[in-house]
Image (cartoon, rainbow, N blue to C red; front, top):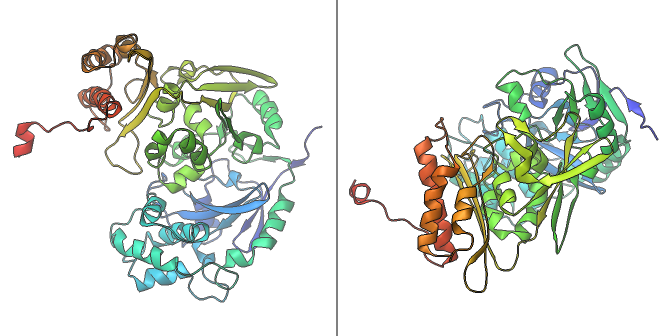
Length: 494
């Protein structure tokens, strides 16, 4: 049955209902809040999802449960807001108008100086306050990865978060808790599973009713820009001033946000965010935990999706190297037709993927790790947190009973125009004893597998040396030796 149609989106903004039509396909939530609604507490800093000054909360129903996540309003498109609750800093005080527990703690612990970053920090800490009654310092620091402050320093901000946690959110001290039941009822009524078409002089915004409707829409508009979390496409607009119309939003589609797992592996819908995938991924592959927590900041992990990180074909995407090393496959859909291929085969060359017009990434399957497998993933970046990779390396090696390498899958990002397996290095170790000499041959083979480029992230020489040294690190870790390479004497003496 064909879906019903609407020509407007409908959402809650703080404590009121908004029905919006006629907006541009590249209209951002930040611009709309500041310019149209005059809610100027939300700031623009970097306009690329790094600094966190624009942080707001967005609530969405998931199987009837309402939860709030932090997002970067600067790269979040207005068209993605249907059936959500947008909460800005102006709505985070208490129902009686007094400061919230987080706001009061920031005052008492001197967590703000110039104040420009403070609204975003308060929004991030408020989300943590609602979600975690006893946050550790590690959890607080992880929550603040996407919020940069260059005045106060983070120590008083962390103290404020710990102090706020001593107050339990309830109907008397938090507006969102007080209005929870009413908000659930309202958002449930908004979610009528209609197809939404927004017309504007600069192009259309299309919001499909479900995954089948997406397939039909994309078949009719094969040149449309599919937007899931907008952590990449948002920068096309704010930094490159690119035209992206027509736009098809998919982040709301429940069929693409499913996670399932059994003894064979994990299947992730293309619309599953990094945050939503973390539990299953880290449970099955604990070696991925550190990498996962270094993908952007919390706001980016809440918005960005597994399918988007694959579909954009970036050579420095964080998830493809480990997924390739694990033998992941990707399922593509066009209309009613589906096909599945190895993930490494999806990437053809820079800017080109094995995807036909009107075909989209539907899901990714990651096989379970064998009991006899060694697996590790490493990320090299200029800044530890919230930075893109210069090199991302993933290794999966299986040994037979005699200690010979029976299987080797090695993949790198940042070393070529696509995420790419190291065929020569794999060949150098397969069928060989897992030994220092074998690893040295594989290390040398990397020079034939890749011809990295120099750019502002890293030089070609640095990338190659890092890749080769990560090969050594993986070997030392699998042998139980300390994964540490001594500094050269000249550096040690400097």
